[in-house]
Length: 286
Ligand code: FES
Image (spheres, rainbow, N blue to C red):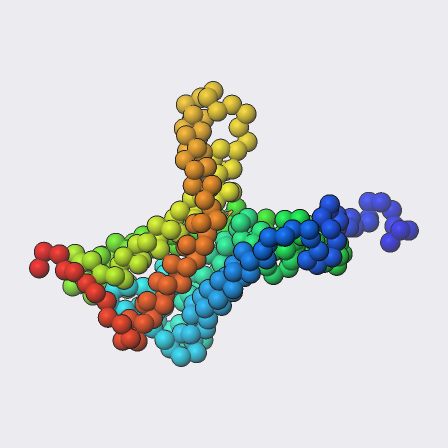
């Protein structure tokens, strides 16, 4: 390689610098339980992610398990993409889940979290990491350079979010024009409040908060400006940026609560469908 002209040499991506923390996995002077938070997060994240993967992608092709009941559609399958001769080995969830999975996997907060608990990179502030990390280019090379797709996944994430809001509206009505999931807003709605509808609502509110509190969105709205008050459009952007900043301060909270509720919403639809629980419903005006 060294004999090649400079123009033909492939630049080697920069490696991770050693940093200032003590070297060696877990080496630290910290006396607190620094491992507790990443430990709890690792368990929670692994349980939810594994469940969502199995439920959204494997359950239906393997066992034909339905993902909708009484007008409630599991959020893992929204928008519902199906067609008459769809192969049975293909889960409709797979056709849409790649967006929220990619969005979460590249999220700045989750990156910090799972780099800690899965890769010990580093395991905590002022806690040593394995020296083997210095051999890796991390986000400078494949596959982690794909983390840069986060902004584009943010744009896409608003598509399923839009349909989740439609599901919420449909979940608060008993429709006499057919199955609402397959023929949205057909017939007459009889308003009702059911636990399933409330769960879908809370889940969608939290998913909306998670998307709106995204660091990338905040930068998109208020970044690359050197004057916030020069024009009316910039003043509007500044106001929006302030609101998004308020949400962004709690991005970690939005991330965990929405992950838990999306899991619970799917569990609830599955249990309802299996007849394990019944949906407590109040019919309004009847
Ligand atoms: Fe977390 Fe964008 S940074 S969703």
